[in-house]
Length: 268
Image (cartoon, rainbow, N blue to C red; front, side, top):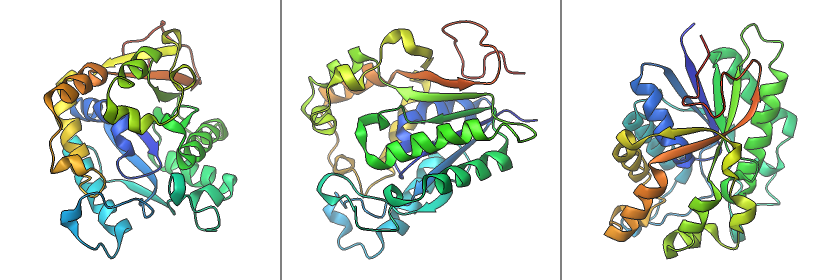
Protein backbone atom coordinates (compact mmCIF):
# COMPACT_ATOMS: atom_id res chain seq x y z
CA UNK A 1 0.00 0.00 0.00
CA UNK A 2 1.57 3.34 -1.01
CA UNK A 3 2.29 5.85 1.71
CA UNK A 4 -0.48 8.42 1.51
CA UNK A 5 -0.92 11.77 3.22
CA UNK A 6 -4.36 13.40 3.31
CA UNK A 7 -4.76 17.06 4.30
CA UNK A 8 -8.28 18.29 5.08
CA UNK A 9 -8.96 22.03 5.03
CA UNK A 10 -11.88 24.43 4.59
CA UNK A 11 -11.00 26.87 1.80
CA UNK A 12 -8.67 27.36 -1.14
CA UNK A 13 -5.45 28.88 0.31
CA UNK A 14 -5.80 26.99 3.63
CA UNK A 15 -3.31 24.46 2.27
CA UNK A 16 -0.72 27.08 3.17
CA UNK A 17 -1.01 25.90 6.77
CA UNK A 18 0.90 22.75 5.79
CA UNK A 19 2.27 23.63 2.35
CA UNK A 20 5.83 22.71 3.32
CA UNK A 21 4.82 19.24 4.50
CA UNK A 22 2.68 18.66 1.40
CA UNK A 23 5.57 19.56 -0.91
CA UNK A 24 8.06 17.59 1.22
CA UNK A 25 6.17 14.30 1.11
CA UNK A 26 5.23 14.71 -2.54
CA UNK A 27 8.94 15.13 -3.33
CA UNK A 28 9.62 11.90 -1.43
CA UNK A 29 7.24 10.08 -3.74
CA UNK A 30 4.33 9.75 -1.35
CA UNK A 31 0.77 10.19 -2.54
CA UNK A 32 -0.41 13.56 -1.23
CA UNK A 33 -4.03 14.67 -1.54
CA UNK A 34 -5.83 17.78 -0.35
CA UNK A 35 -9.54 17.63 0.51
CA UNK A 36 -11.13 21.09 0.53
CA UNK A 37 -14.57 21.51 2.11
CA UNK A 38 -15.61 24.58 0.09
CA UNK A 39 -14.62 26.57 -2.99
CA UNK A 40 -14.21 29.79 -1.01
CA UNK A 41 -17.31 31.40 -2.50
CA UNK A 42 -17.62 33.95 0.32
CA UNK A 43 -14.09 35.30 0.06
CA UNK A 44 -13.15 38.82 -0.97
CA UNK A 45 -11.44 39.79 -4.22
CA UNK A 46 -8.45 41.72 -2.91
CA UNK A 47 -6.68 42.26 -6.23
CA UNK A 48 -8.43 45.12 -8.02
CA UNK A 49 -6.80 44.16 -11.32
CA UNK A 50 -9.18 41.19 -11.54
CA UNK A 51 -12.15 43.52 -11.94
CA UNK A 52 -15.65 42.17 -11.41
CA UNK A 53 -15.54 38.42 -10.75
CA UNK A 54 -18.79 36.71 -11.78
CA UNK A 55 -18.09 33.37 -10.10
CA UNK A 56 -15.61 33.65 -7.24
CA UNK A 57 -15.95 29.97 -6.33
CA UNK A 58 -14.91 28.88 -9.83
CA UNK A 59 -11.97 31.30 -9.80
CA UNK A 60 -10.75 30.14 -6.40
CA UNK A 61 -11.08 26.51 -7.45
CA UNK A 62 -8.73 27.17 -10.35
CA UNK A 63 -6.33 29.01 -8.04
CA UNK A 64 -6.25 26.00 -5.73
CA UNK A 65 -5.65 23.61 -8.61
CA UNK A 66 -2.69 25.75 -9.65
CA UNK A 67 -1.37 25.82 -6.06
CA UNK A 68 -1.58 22.03 -5.82
CA UNK A 69 0.30 21.73 -9.09
CA UNK A 70 3.05 24.00 -7.75
CA UNK A 71 3.31 21.95 -4.54
CA UNK A 72 3.57 18.77 -6.63
CA UNK A 73 0.50 17.12 -5.15
CA UNK A 74 -2.61 15.62 -6.74
CA UNK A 75 -5.54 17.81 -7.87
CA UNK A 76 -7.76 18.78 -4.93
CA UNK A 77 -10.86 16.89 -3.86
CA UNK A 78 -13.80 19.21 -3.13
CA UNK A 79 -16.32 18.10 -0.50
CA UNK A 80 -19.09 20.30 -1.92
CA UNK A 81 -19.98 22.61 0.98
CA UNK A 82 -20.43 26.40 0.77
CA UNK A 83 -18.05 28.92 2.32
CA UNK A 84 -19.55 30.52 5.44
CA UNK A 85 -17.62 33.78 5.16
CA UNK A 86 -15.70 35.55 7.91
CA UNK A 87 -16.17 38.41 10.37
CA UNK A 88 -18.93 40.76 9.15
CA UNK A 89 -19.50 38.50 6.12
CA UNK A 90 -20.43 35.38 8.12
CA UNK A 91 -23.51 33.83 6.48
CA UNK A 92 -25.37 32.65 9.55
CA UNK A 93 -28.70 32.55 7.69
CA UNK A 94 -27.41 30.68 4.64
CA UNK A 95 -28.60 27.05 4.91
CA UNK A 96 -25.90 26.01 2.42
CA UNK A 97 -23.04 27.44 4.49
CA UNK A 98 -20.63 24.95 6.00
CA UNK A 99 -21.28 26.34 9.48
CA UNK A 100 -24.93 25.26 9.11
CA UNK A 101 -24.26 21.83 7.62
CA UNK A 102 -25.12 18.74 9.63
CA UNK A 103 -21.93 17.77 11.44
CA UNK A 104 -22.47 14.08 10.74
CA UNK A 105 -22.75 14.88 7.02
CA UNK A 106 -19.43 16.71 7.03
CA UNK A 107 -17.83 13.82 8.90
CA UNK A 108 -19.33 11.29 6.47
CA UNK A 109 -17.93 13.07 3.40
CA UNK A 110 -14.47 13.17 4.93
CA UNK A 111 -14.75 9.50 5.87
CA UNK A 112 -15.66 8.67 2.26
CA UNK A 113 -12.40 10.28 1.13
CA UNK A 114 -10.51 8.34 3.81
CA UNK A 115 -12.10 5.06 2.66
CA UNK A 116 -11.15 5.71 -0.95
CA UNK A 117 -7.58 6.95 -0.42
CA UNK A 118 -6.59 4.88 2.64
CA UNK A 119 -4.13 7.46 4.01
CA UNK A 120 -1.83 6.47 6.83
CA UNK A 121 -1.54 10.09 8.01
CA UNK A 122 -4.10 12.92 8.08
CA UNK A 123 -3.43 16.63 8.64
CA UNK A 124 -5.95 19.30 9.56
CA UNK A 125 -6.41 22.45 11.65
CA UNK A 126 -5.64 22.69 15.34
CA UNK A 127 -8.58 22.84 17.82
CA UNK A 128 -8.73 26.64 17.49
CA UNK A 129 -8.96 26.47 13.70
CA UNK A 130 -5.73 28.41 13.30
CA UNK A 131 -7.29 31.76 14.18
CA UNK A 132 -10.89 30.88 15.04
CA UNK A 133 -12.58 30.84 11.61
CA UNK A 134 -15.92 29.06 11.99
CA UNK A 135 -15.37 26.87 8.89
CA UNK A 136 -11.93 25.86 10.16
CA UNK A 137 -13.51 24.75 13.42
CA UNK A 138 -16.16 22.69 11.62
CA UNK A 139 -13.52 20.96 9.47
CA UNK A 140 -11.21 20.32 12.43
CA UNK A 141 -13.94 18.65 14.47
CA UNK A 142 -15.37 16.69 11.55
CA UNK A 143 -11.92 15.43 10.52
CA UNK A 144 -11.18 14.35 14.08
CA UNK A 145 -14.52 12.55 14.26
CA UNK A 146 -13.89 10.88 10.88
CA UNK A 147 -10.52 9.60 12.10
CA UNK A 148 -12.24 7.91 15.03
CA UNK A 149 -15.23 6.61 13.05
CA UNK A 150 -13.02 5.12 10.33
CA UNK A 151 -11.99 2.23 12.59
CA UNK A 152 -14.26 -0.19 10.72
CA UNK A 153 -12.46 0.38 7.42
CA UNK A 154 -10.05 -2.29 6.13
CA UNK A 155 -7.09 0.12 6.33
CA UNK A 156 -7.95 2.97 8.70
CA UNK A 157 -5.57 5.93 9.07
CA UNK A 158 -2.87 5.49 11.68
CA UNK A 159 -2.18 9.07 12.77
CA UNK A 160 -3.99 12.38 12.92
CA UNK A 161 -1.95 15.56 13.24
CA UNK A 162 -2.97 19.15 13.87
CA UNK A 163 -0.89 21.95 12.37
CA UNK A 164 -0.03 24.31 15.23
CA UNK A 165 1.97 27.45 15.94
CA UNK A 166 4.13 27.54 19.07
CA UNK A 167 3.48 30.38 21.48
CA UNK A 168 6.86 31.95 20.68
CA UNK A 169 5.99 32.12 16.96
CA UNK A 170 2.70 33.87 17.61
CA UNK A 171 4.39 36.37 19.87
CA UNK A 172 6.88 37.11 17.08
CA UNK A 173 4.01 37.52 14.63
CA UNK A 174 2.48 40.15 16.92
CA UNK A 175 5.51 42.31 16.13
CA UNK A 176 4.48 42.50 12.45
CA UNK A 177 1.52 44.72 11.57
CA UNK A 178 0.56 42.47 8.65
CA UNK A 179 0.57 39.31 10.77
CA UNK A 180 -1.12 41.14 13.65
CA UNK A 181 -4.05 42.04 11.36
CA UNK A 182 -4.61 38.35 10.67
CA UNK A 183 -4.42 37.46 14.36
CA UNK A 184 -6.88 40.20 15.29
CA UNK A 185 -7.75 40.07 18.98
CA UNK A 186 -6.70 36.43 19.35
CA UNK A 187 -4.56 35.97 22.44
CA UNK A 188 -1.28 34.16 21.62
CA UNK A 189 -1.51 32.44 25.01
CA UNK A 190 -4.78 30.86 23.87
CA UNK A 191 -4.03 30.23 20.19
CA UNK A 192 -0.34 29.39 20.61
CA UNK A 193 0.75 25.91 21.61
CA UNK A 194 3.04 24.76 24.39
CA UNK A 195 6.17 23.37 22.67
CA UNK A 196 5.82 20.20 24.75
CA UNK A 197 2.71 19.37 22.71
CA UNK A 198 4.61 19.43 19.41
CA UNK A 199 4.99 15.85 18.16
CA UNK A 200 6.82 16.72 14.93
CA UNK A 201 8.87 19.81 14.11
CA UNK A 202 9.34 19.42 10.38
CA UNK A 203 12.13 21.29 8.60
CA UNK A 204 10.56 22.57 5.37
CA UNK A 205 13.17 25.17 4.44
CA UNK A 206 13.95 23.44 1.10
CA UNK A 207 10.29 23.92 0.13
CA UNK A 208 9.69 27.47 1.36
CA UNK A 209 9.92 29.09 -2.07
CA UNK A 210 7.54 26.51 -3.51
CA UNK A 211 5.15 27.06 -0.61
CA UNK A 212 5.21 30.81 -1.22
CA UNK A 213 4.72 30.33 -4.96
CA UNK A 214 1.65 28.20 -4.21
CA UNK A 215 0.40 30.97 -1.93
CA UNK A 216 0.82 33.48 -4.73
CA UNK A 217 -1.39 31.32 -6.96
CA UNK A 218 -4.34 32.61 -4.90
CA UNK A 219 -4.29 35.93 -6.72
CA UNK A 220 -7.84 36.89 -5.75
CA UNK A 221 -7.13 36.62 -2.02
CA UNK A 222 -3.75 38.27 -1.62
CA UNK A 223 -3.22 41.86 -2.70
CA UNK A 224 0.48 41.33 -1.89
CA UNK A 225 0.73 39.23 -5.04
CA UNK A 226 1.02 42.44 -7.03
CA UNK A 227 2.71 44.30 -4.15
CA UNK A 228 5.63 42.19 -2.96
CA UNK A 229 6.19 42.27 0.83
CA UNK A 230 9.07 44.28 2.23
CA UNK A 231 12.34 42.48 3.06
CA UNK A 232 11.74 42.69 6.82
CA UNK A 233 8.40 40.91 6.46
CA UNK A 234 9.95 38.23 4.22
CA UNK A 235 12.68 37.66 6.80
CA UNK A 236 10.06 37.19 9.53
CA UNK A 237 8.08 34.80 7.35
CA UNK A 238 11.21 32.75 6.75
CA UNK A 239 12.03 32.69 10.46
CA UNK A 240 8.55 31.45 11.39
CA UNK A 241 7.89 29.16 8.43
CA UNK A 242 11.22 27.35 8.12
CA UNK A 243 9.69 24.70 10.37
CA UNK A 244 6.10 23.47 10.47
CA UNK A 245 4.84 22.17 13.80
CA UNK A 246 2.36 19.35 14.28
CA UNK A 247 0.59 18.20 17.43
CA UNK A 248 -0.65 14.63 17.64
CA UNK A 249 -4.44 14.45 17.58
CA UNK A 250 -4.78 10.65 17.67
CA UNK A 251 -2.92 7.46 16.82
CA UNK A 252 -3.86 3.83 16.31
CA UNK A 253 -0.49 2.42 17.22
CA UNK A 254 2.64 3.10 19.22
CA UNK A 255 4.66 6.26 18.79
CA UNK A 256 8.33 5.32 18.33
CA UNK A 257 9.67 8.33 20.27
CA UNK A 258 8.79 11.83 21.41
CA UNK A 259 9.14 14.08 19.62
CA UNK A 260 9.36 12.41 16.22
CA UNK A 261 11.32 13.70 13.24
CA UNK A 262 8.78 12.63 10.64
CA UNK A 263 5.00 12.32 10.41
CA UNK A 264 5.37 8.75 9.11
CA UNK A 265 8.14 7.69 11.49
CA UNK A 266 7.65 4.07 12.53
CA UNK A 267 4.90 3.38 9.98
CA UNK A 268 5.82 0.61 7.57
